[in-house]
Amino acid sequence: MSTSRDGGRPIAPAEGKLGVLLPGMGAVATTFIAGVEAIRKGLSRPIGSLTQMGTVRLGKRTENRAPRIADLVPLARLDDIVFGGWDIYADNAYEAAHKAGVLHGEHLQTLRAFLETVKPWPAVFDPVYVKKLHGEHVKKGKSKRDLADQVIGDIQDFKKKNGLGRMVMVWCGSTEVYRQASEVHSTIAKFERGLDESDPEILPSMVYAYAAIKLGIPYANGAPNLSADIPALMELARKTGTPISGKARLLGLQGWYSTNILGNRDGEVLDDPESFKTKEVSKLGVLEHILQPKLYPDLYGDIHHVVRINYYPPRGDNKEGWDNIDIFGWMGYPMQIKVDFLCRDSILAAPIVLDLALFSDLAGRAGMGGIQEWLSFYFKSPMTAAGLYPEHDLFIQLMKLKNTLRHLKGEELITHLGLEYYD
Image (cartoon, rainbow, N blue to C red; front, top):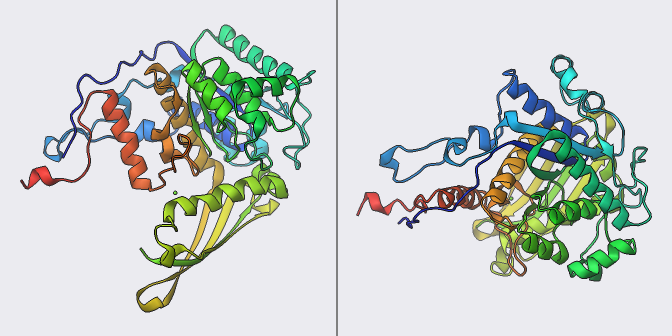
């Protein structure tokens, strides 16, 4: 049974240029930038992007209405995107992409002239939080407040120079060391005092998130860092009406052993135990929410979950993950699932950055401030309201996303019960 909606939600038109701000212009960001430019030039297709290739069914199946998402809601055009960002290395996007080794040489040469025009601003960086990297293109400041003001200055200059109508920010930087939310993160007043005092619990990603949210710029976090997922920045997002999202998914389960080898900058960063802790907590916490062991103690009450990430330089951006899952079924008989997943990390991530940028901009124009739970589809550890566990079922996440789009346009929400065809 469907639920009717009348009128939809008013959405400001996607007029003018959209600035996409990228803290961290390494493998993922440069693959994203190069891919968008290749699509704009007609050299490639937007494979992997829901905003560009996805459809959404409207009404009953018998109506045969399934427009492209880009035709249903007013998304920014790829031709209107302007790229800007920060990095701890001064390499332009061509040089950074060449060093990352994700894209083939012929692709880079074709796009070289454009990529060389995309140059990063000095980054907010401290090796205390990413111990495996040594920044040489970094901001200096009297305090973290000063650094945040410098980021705000970069953003305002970028907007003025390019005549931008709107901006979004997508964190593409490295995984920072593990931190739990503390007192300085509890309110915006304490957080801003912490900026003045350069509190060590305020990490660089939080400085970027603060700058964006303070300016009302939608912010999406593409890594497992806390970043904007703290009470202070959620409070600020509500105050400024800014969309935020992120944190980069009934047999019994005895154990899950997962090991990954990765050779690019991400692999090097995760070779540090403290940065790995951030990733490990994110990965381990997902199973807790998916399996709900408190509801099913006999099935999931005693799981042995082990995650390993090994830095292996020869592999480059080609990440490989081996998973061994020990399960049991009827009468307790043991079984196993084994998975070997070989992928190109940045090739998977680039279309996600595009979708997050366009959907975050859409949310901003629709007046949808605060946590964007409808974007859970894109995140391993989605942000939710305080006290609410995240929904990890991939099919429910996609239904939530498409129902949000239907709601925005005043279309019926779809439950997929299908009973109306047989009543």
